[in-house]
View 1 (tube, rainbow, N blue to C red):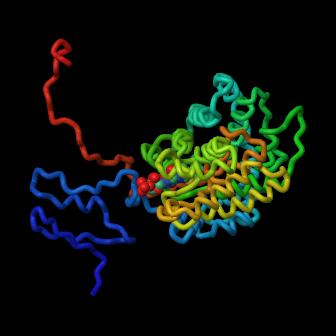
View 2: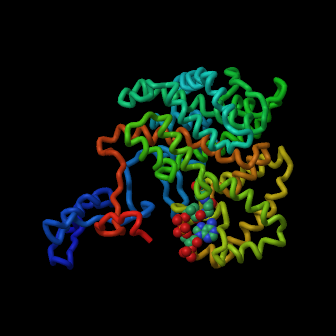
Length: 428
Ligand code: ACO
């Protein structure tokens, strides 16, 4: 009869071991019993970048990379993007269930009434250079929020955790908008609680002289983009939030670690990198030469490829549709034609087919953000706004998980054996 176990024979000793298999995994710690002798530390698994290691059990997001499936709490991303609001999705991620009408109204009310930040936040925002990258500003400011809310350290108390959840989701758009205004030398626009979550954010970024004409199609497009970014299981930034959070630091500090991870060009910074790449290509006639350079290993086709999706990224499909809705309002972004042609050529090219490289969520999102009027260096801030509920949901799940311990990977030491200190006069 089939058994849920793995039999290992250690050829160094001839000993046989039986390790239990649960949920398709063996526990790496079970390998430690495999030793060559008493002095041996025991067998470890070597997995830089966690290519094949589950770091947690999670009920938040399901991805099947081969089939191109993404679900939040069981609901397909396509349905959420079509039917839900961003705050509804945030509630779903955080609470595990879609809200009832009453629950949603309460949630929206709470978010609406925590949008203001302490006035000192505007003061230290002033300290950033006029040309500070808004992601640098965002990560610094969110980290600093922990000093305004020392109660956030009480991470064991569910009521306190809930309050920080509300504070983070309410205040991140305000801080993000301040970062935007700061980088443009514009005065800050304060939150308006008569507006929707998205409407208020757009107003804080674009209002000039007390006026802003809202475009509801663009606002819904932005909302869909935020929904598509809201969680993505154990990606680089979420792992950063969990890992830093496992030290029991407050959630503002843990989330700012997530923002720092998202800043990198291989993660959230890719949408910015796509636009830079499209600018460099400049014209359609330059595409074949650019593709040849990528294939020769001189740079990457930004916005292509994904660690998990190996058939297509379902978010990229949805975003392409949103792009057309947006361009109907704003006029065509001339870079779209280069992007479409780049995608067409790449999808027919053996190099990309063989490596299962498809457009990811970032391939088109930057073009949309640009059409909406956001500068290139601001794209990743918009990504952070979207990802925030996922970070918090994963942080809380990590805290409540009885198996959680402080994150602390092992290493294979490849340095020197012990050696004696060499006095300065005898060196070199
Ligand atoms: N352009 C050209 N070649 C690529 C690309 C790309 N965008 N992505 C991967 N490859 C190639 C690699 O060179 C490698 O080729 P090789 O086997 O000949 O050495 C092969 O495909 C596998 O690549 P890895 O780097 O091992 O794949 P990994 O899963 O580690 O990387 C990643 C995934 C980081 C997303 C990668 O595809 C990449 O750099 N893409 C461009 C940046 C990007 O768009 N990032 C956004 C990701 S989505 C997100 O964060 C929201």
